[in-house]
Image 1 (cartoon, rainbow, N blue to C red):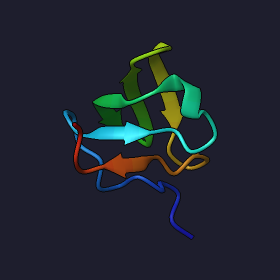
Image 2: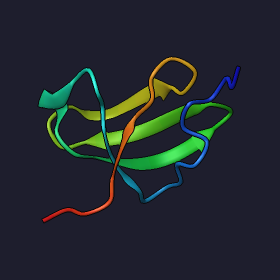
Image 3: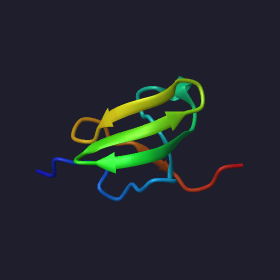
Length: 62
């Protein structure tokens, strides 16, 4: 099994947390050793464990 559900994420990409829609849109700040730091609109900076949560990539923002 893959330990990191978000291998493709890179700084600058936009994501949403699947279990926290109220956090709003987030932008990836860093992705190091399976830990993804994301700056969310409504919550601020959060560190996500990539082996537990698969963030949803947002390809188009309006």
